[in-house]
View 1 (cartoon, one colour):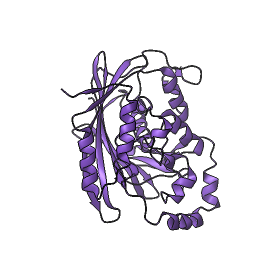
View 2 (cartoon, rainbow, N blue to C red):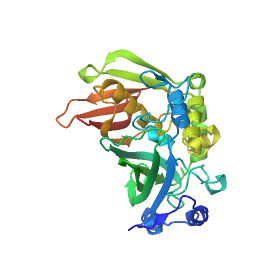
View 3 (cartoon, one colour):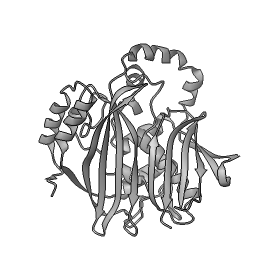
View 4 (cartoon, rainbow, N blue to C red):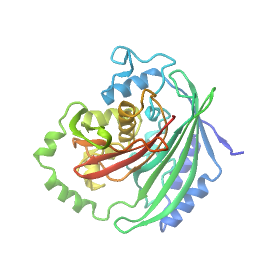
Length: 347
């Protein structure tokens, strides 16, 4: 039996923060340190899923009708309201003091030790159980375990550490959802300041103008993809990214601190959250592929390239109607695939 770690683990967090400051000589050593720290441990937290959090997420997404006839602009969803697939990401958020966060604002619970401090959402998989859908008012236990930490090598990015975490969400009705997430940890860019100066030249008036959009925007274009399913076009403003960061209690500075993002990370602008794009894909599937069943069986996905604030991108159907009831989707920006996902139905 795995040892239970209580909800309040301040002393453990302090120890973890001190450990995270230790240096690893290479990715293999960093991965070994992480596995040694969390081997055979399960962190268990309990939370009541409240309607206010779901209401705020619906408003942030520009989708106020959480279900037909229930407009979240008027009131929070009542107890018993099903939580749409992926929307659980605004619950069980990090619960650390600011002093416990990493230099980039990230929760350090499963962060790799320095110098592998640059975190990026890599992908994962979610599987929902039949007839045990999460609902507003549920008292839920989240069981989190470190599944793996692996050294990787890339020609373009060099050494990195791939970290895999498994989360199980359990209600009094039983297991509802298994959420497996992967992050990649890389060293900071060697020439971040020089790269930031170059990005300053690219940060022209057109991009600044795009960043001024006040709300998320979307449209279904006249161009149709495979099987006549439409594209959905999205663009996120700084306000929307701030709201999503607040809902997920995500202090990662790449999503709101322009100076940090450009100077330290070397990006042209703040980054759209990977989990936000994941929710967008699931919403697209519900709107065009669910055939009336608002919940999928599973999704597997990979984040491939970042999207920045103010950029317009599209969610498209790559294929649908396979023997396994699988739908392949992608998130595309100017011909670049930024995220890919495969969703299977319950049927």
